Image 1: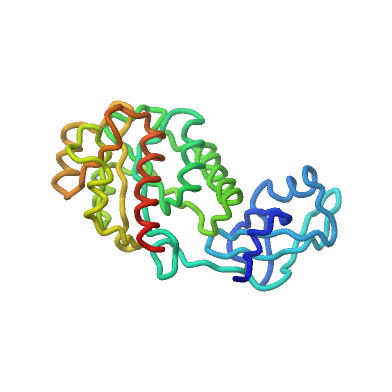
Image 2: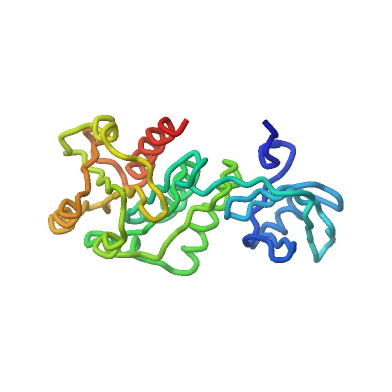
Length: 262
């Protein structure tokens, strides 16, 4: 098998703004400064650009000075199918969760990206804290930066999409192959529940994992999820923090789905 360029440990990975336009490569905000000032990459050094849309681009430094850092293409990109598409390692999995407070949200996003979530849907649940509802441009950029760093570290070629906050009712309006609501009181353990489910989620028909806020879903929200056919998923006997539940639940679903695709 031909090695992927982003698998070469000698090559540094950098996030691109997006797929290159007409062969012009632009590094994401802060990446050029890091390459020039911290890593001290210079003319002719090779690197890899991740466009977040399934491609790893071999690049070479074309200019590096006190004010400018430019790269150009250095060969054909390596591509991989999007989650849920034929040949992909994982299905399309969405995580609908209230955001935890403070920098716990950024740490959660980093790990969800590593584990392979396709979409994060922040939940504006009734019991979500005011801070969890906050969507300042600064916080959204911090979350996006955490996702980019996780992709660079893990070699993931598709970005984790972070959607605007929605109420549970609004999220339920989007179709799903299966909805899974994390609940420590669920009668069946996670392994038993997942064994009987279709886990071939796609963009149009995703697997959706629900994680409640720190106060839990309200009875009305649980009824709405149950009425929509959401399956309760038990991870164990203890009440988990938001980020712990989201990461553990995603890890189980992703591992079960990956095993079926191999």
